[in-house]
Amino acid sequence: MPTPSSLRLIVARGLALLAMLAACLSPALPRAAEPGCRPEMARLGPPVLRANLAADQVRVTFVGHATFLIETAGGVKVATDYNDYVRPPVTPDIATMNKAHSTHFSRAPDPAIRHVLRGWDPSGAGAALHDLTLGDLRVRNVPTNIRTYAGGTDHDGNSIFVFEVGELCIVHLGHLHHPLEPGHLRALGRVDVMLFPVDGSYTLDQDGMLEVLTALQARVMIPMHFFGGGSLARFLGRAQESWPIERRDSPQIVVGRASLPQRPTVIVLPGN
Image (cartoon, rainbow, N blue to C red; front, side):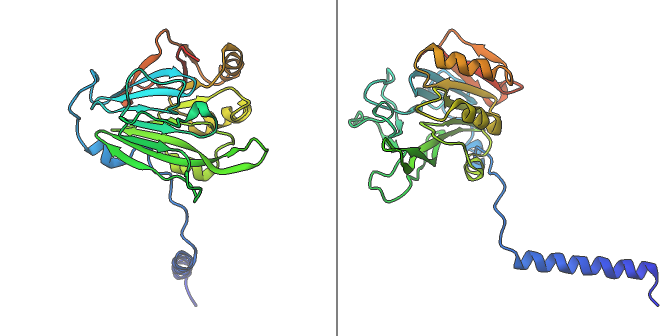
């Protein structure tokens, strides 16, 4: 008759065999969220400094509406939601665009721009897919849907753009119209700085935007697309229940991975 110890051994071996069979027969599980910055960017080493910044720093300037100028230590310049109305004072190397409204894309971008990345596929064949590395900056996109004027859905008509410099990740939500799903969160990975709309009507409502902020927990959260002080004040009144609020006098902020706030913080830059 088997002893208790031998019975335990038999049971343990049976459970191990079942686990092996389950692993072989089960479909592959989704991968865990990838880090927001791919390891290759951090291993590039310090760039040749061209923008009066330390090697691990990025300068972000709120130009207005949904347009930010992002400058890396290596001198790469990006304008987000580049359009024909609100433009940065310099010609960027990269322009990212969204097609929700004409204030988020340009029909006639400056021909001196080296890379124009549209957040939608102009041919209508599917989602736009971008993954560009220029100097010390990587730019990629995560497609989302937008509402149409007729009340329908323009699938993959918006893109969230992700800017990766060294170990720092900056995310521009674009003209986001719906909450983020698990697939979006996995594709984004860790987010350090988030640029997000707070108008609450043309884009995602403020309840939904607060859910997005809670899900991503970026250490720096910079509001945009607020059409004056009313919608911004309403948003800040609700956000202050969860996060500290800082108002800056300058539209520029210099950020680095090592100097991020200890806890998620909403930082308001002057502009509209």
